[in-house]
Each structure stands twice: as structure tokens, then as C-alpha cells.
Image 1: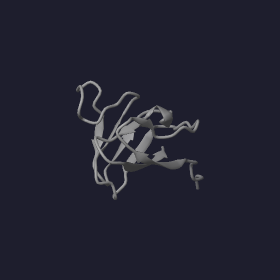
Image 2: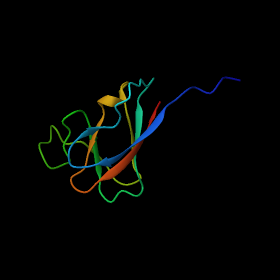
Image 3: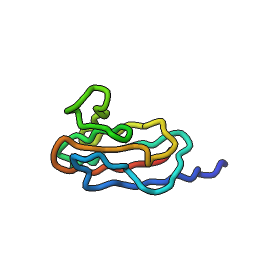
Length: 98
């Protein structure tokens, strides 16, 4: 029987109208990072690279919107390169390295 692979999890609270990295930890994923918007969020969270905007700016900087309870796997190795922002209010995300 194969062993259970190691993985890391975390969360980011207080995501607001200024884009923030989802983690400041020096972590590396094998395949990517799954990001889940908290079911208690009242606003969408926009996910993207540094400089991401909340669906209110240029199409080239607007992030991928996650409504409460939605998730996406981002194919990046370093989760610190994933940023999150909201158009208003604050939100929370959880993440898991895969």
C-alpha cells in the first residue's frame, strides 16, 4: 500500500480591496494550489497574479472570480505568487497544495 503524500493547507482572512498574496510562507506545490472561497463570504474573491483587480478594471488584470463556496486549482508551484482581492468588503479563502 502506498503512503499518503504530504500536503500543506492554510487560509487567508481579511482579503479586501487591495490585492494580497494568499500566503507569505515559502511553500512549493507538486501540481498546483487549490483555492476555496469561504462559504461565509458575502462578496466574490478574485484570484490572479500580483496586480490582480476585482473585475472593475482592465480585462487584462481582472482576476478569476470565486463566489462563496467555489474553488479552483491554480497550476502554479509557489502559492505566494497567487493574489486575491475583492471589489468591496472582506473575504476569506482556504488553500491546499496539491
